[in-house]
Length: 422
Image (cartoon, rainbow, N blue to C red; front, top):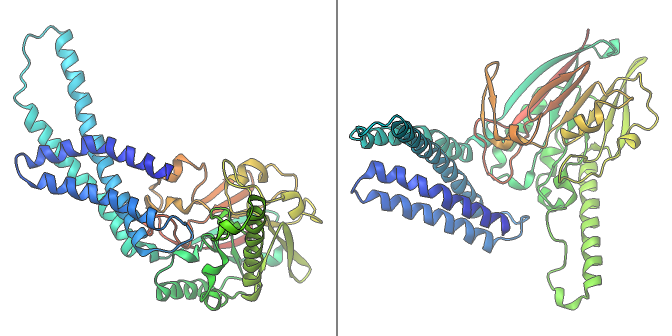
């Protein structure tokens, strides 16, 4: 609720300038009041949805729609604000210069027309992110992209020259609303014919029960060397309350114990689901893949991230029994782990695979030219391949979606990485 109030306060602040733009364009016409009424309805609707569905684990189409509309209107108002506030700043500077230059009278006749022109430009620019958000919720969230990379290593064992990895991340199965589209994506992943499939966490949004009815589909992911997985921050059930509904029959201590038990049972259920699907879940463990006399190590660490995210993983435990010389592929959900621990570790992890950021599910990407997203303000490494010295990190943009029920510009991703011997 606190976050909701913050969003509401920001909306009101932006609306002050946004309404100025609409009023400038509408003049005496009534449609400015229609705009204001729609804005109020959008805000009241999202508040209503979060009151009706306070549990984040609940799946609600109406709440998803409300969130999408709020995000679309937020970006619309933000662009309005930037244009109108910028025009106010320019006008103030212009007035100050006029005063300091002791100019008696400045010609102000052109100001209304200039403000109207800027308002028109602002409206045209704002239509782009507004339309993108709506398109992302309609079609973009299932616009799966296969991103292919070829990475070269001096110390790659000869037998693994040309070894193909298919990486998936952040499935967030509880958000899906179109099974046919997801089936297409799973088939697309299988069509890449990777030697191994590596999943880097966040299978569910919050609870194992979200997987009901999806086990057979994701269990159909196949590769010669199998499917390996790790847990992401959402897989632990940390973001929902596990207390029983009839709280009056328990003491405070009993409630705490019941919640702890329910959360543990949920975790065991998620373990079982992955095992039944044929996935090898690595809980601070490592597994060897061999080709004749050569081998590589798949190392899986539990979630470990910077900031407010939980630190369950133990990198040293995950590398038990490994030497510094072995070629290692590390699965670690949160890419901040790479900068904070991984790249400086003596064990040397030649390739680290992560996810987590989703690229914020919104941005602009033109390969070779531009890569922009609000994720840039939060994460140093938020999408794609990064290299330092002779170590690589790939941050997968995610298979699913969460929060905003869509993707605009940052499309859902299936990564294919081919290892090459330098």
